[in-house]
Image 1: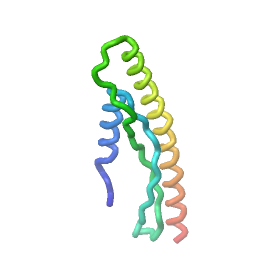
Image 2: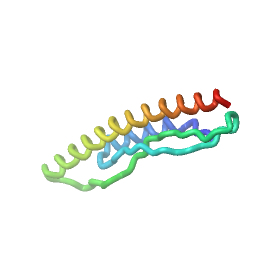
Image 3: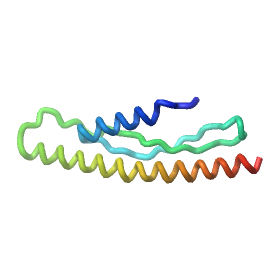
Image 4: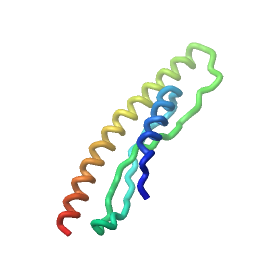
Length: 102
């Protein structure tokens, strides 16, 4: 089961959550069987979780809360995105090494 549209959907969701605020991004590990090599491959993806929805705010305190939520969302995207990129490289190297041994 290969997901070709996954990165585009993740980028669109990341953009939407960054604009709206209240999202956290967390890395998630998955495992998939590769029949060509006969091994289990690990993969990492970036998952967005909506923490809260801030609708109907009208005062200055609410605006500050929205700015803070956007900053937290952006920071979690950068940190978790970096973890996913490094994890994917490590998992890819591990899978290639195990596949060459077979």
